[in-house]
Image 1 (cartoon, rainbow, N blue to C red):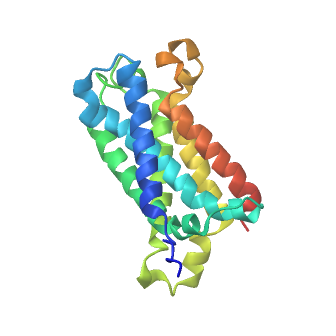
Image 2: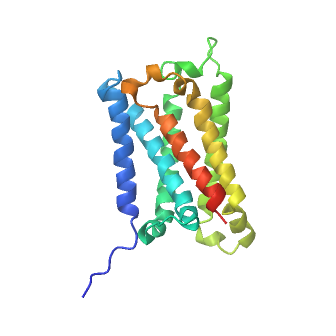
Image 3: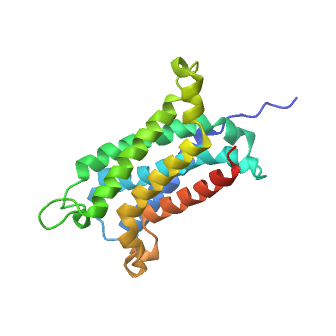
Length: 215
């Protein structure tokens, strides 16, 4: 008699993404980079959490469209989408709170002008980040039982157009935040791409998959 396999792979997916994301942050900034280990509990974990959040949200949005374009996606991954997406949203919230506490010229000097105000691209990054967070929050509301009867709301929030807008806002946030560092590979710690660039690449792939695979 065969033992029924676990049909929800949320736990291993979430754990695996978190471990890989935080490990990459540690490798890039501590092992081959100049950041001291005292900054691990907040500065580096924030970067790892942000990368994990983007990857998990991309998985949540991308598994279904991947299947639609003919890529074999395990049923256990499809069943994990709700938990993966909600975990990604929670990590975005954690990232936003941690970034708010860290957001000062001493930490993010390139985001500030000499007079202490935000640069143009820093302001655009913050704006698109806030808008992306609101869109993700609205999307997560679609999972709430008390809203299930509102068919118009559910139809809008889960529509192809709405989710593509979410991707554009998330990608814009990453672009405005990190594009200057992306253009200077000679300054990449150990030759490793910035976390914002890695996250942008993941989002770009997820956007393309959703563009062609979401009904």
